[in-house]
Length: 196
Image 1 (spheres, rainbow, N blue to C red):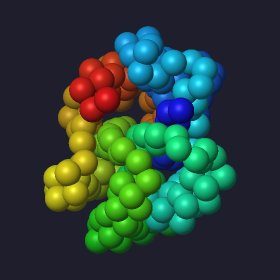
Image 2: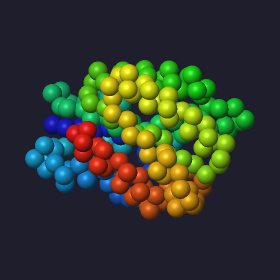
Image 3: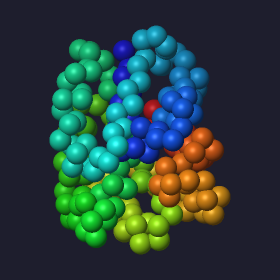
C-alpha cells in the first residue's frame, strides 16, 4: 500500500477553495492517472495534513503523531512538504520564526520524514505583500541547500509563480483561488512524476 502525506500550512490545506480544487487533490489524482499500476486506487491513500497558521516548527511538532496515527505496517510513505510562508509572516511586527529557527526545524523535519519514507519538498509560494514576499524569498535558497545536503528533491516554484497573474489571484494576499491552485499543481506535477 502507498500512502501520500501532504504536509504544510493553510495553502496546502486549500483555504478558499473546494477540496476537489486544491492543488494537493489535483497532484494526487495526476499521480494515480500517470502510474495506475504502481499506485492503484484502492489501496493508495491521500492525507492532506495542511493546517492553518502552521509554521515549520508546528509541522515538526505534530509530525510523529500524524504519521503514527495513519501509518499502516508495510506501507510505503510518500511525504510532500510545502512550508515557510507562516515562518516568515510578521503578525505582531516580528517574524513567527527567525531564518535560523526556520532552517533548524526544516532540517529536523526532513531528517525525521526521511527515516519513515520518501520525501519531496516544494518551495513556499509568493504572497502579495512585498516585505513578506522578500522574507520568503530569502528562505528558499536555505531550504534548497538543506535538501541538497540530505539528497532530497526540491522544486522551487516561487520564481515562476511570482507573476502578476498569480499574485492578482490571491484574493486575501496569501491563498490562491481555484485558478491559482491549478497553476501550482501544474508547476509541481512533472517534477513529482520524475521523483516517483
